[in-house]
Length: 466
Image (tube, rainbow, N blue to C red; front, side):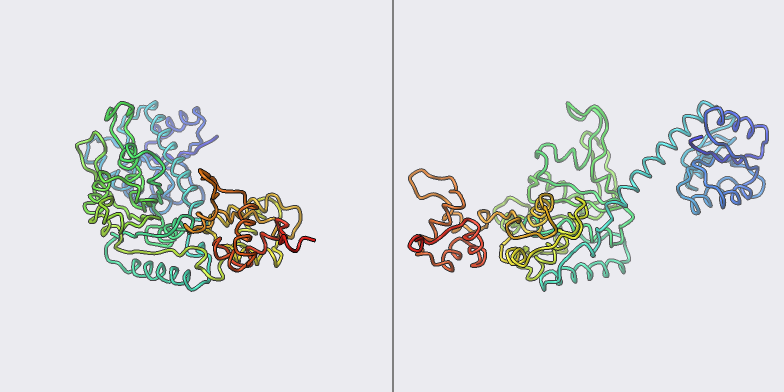
């Protein structure tokens, strides 16, 4: 038998009929004749559904539902009532009932209602699973780094969480997280949610640059059936899905001006209107946004609303780029090496001293994301426990800086494609008469980084090649 139902009914004949019917439908059916007896049974066994009469000797069905909802909230209560009026149904729902049935009970209707209750229970369990999985390593402990820049960020997050824990109302301030791509802005948003007052609610993430602008509104605010050509059904938007929790808007600078106005209304009124609907709905959520754009500059250029900018950045957190986090590169690299090693069944991996030197010397234009992804490939291809410098697949040609990009391009007429790494390094060394320090500076690399490239490529100064 797959599911169990606890029947609480003082009419023994009715209780027996319901039990017989449910057992034929492959349910495990338990019967109690009073609420007090049911509460005793619940100490030893927890059913999937509680089916109770309203009028019971002693404690009423409403009181039983209220008590069960408090003790075992995973149980779905269904009320049976002989009155069949709206007031009785409303009282049952307020007590925590999933639904109600009027007597005489139609057994086929009861079966449909039980199926709905079990479907809702399965969905809740699924959501709880994903919520719990999302919460793993999602708090402050996930913000790895001991550099001064990172300690400042973590201190600010702690201060904000501490202040929010003492707030009288539940309307938490909007937070804007600014930083380059790959710096870990999402981790900070997750820390604010899962270590904060709304940790029991949903954390809904949406990248504003991930879908075309004309689809953003329907994705965020939902739509009614027939609102537009492809709207074949009513659809809940991400804002409503985040009700009671946090909505994280990544790359918020990519949002167009029309949608910016609707986001501003949401922040100010806490109401939304689905596309095709005339009814506004109240929502209770916290908004955290993130961007790698210069929003102040976009405001000056008229590409981002000034009022929305100030509304989003009640709290502003700036995330440092990885190269500015002195000492954190090795800390993160060892963490990712262990993480990927465990994933690919290669425990015990460690860096050679040359590899660590190389990791510290590189400027990491892709920040933490580049480091993590590069080390996944390194671990995947590793043959032994020792990871050498030659196994680190870094991309020095991606180092940022306009001067470097200029040097990385060919100088011939119409030549606009980057040269090979070997040709680029040789040309720069020849230009500086093989002055490694000066060449490294022009290329945007450290001196040690360039020395490593020279050795790896097997380059030798021409006048010494004898």
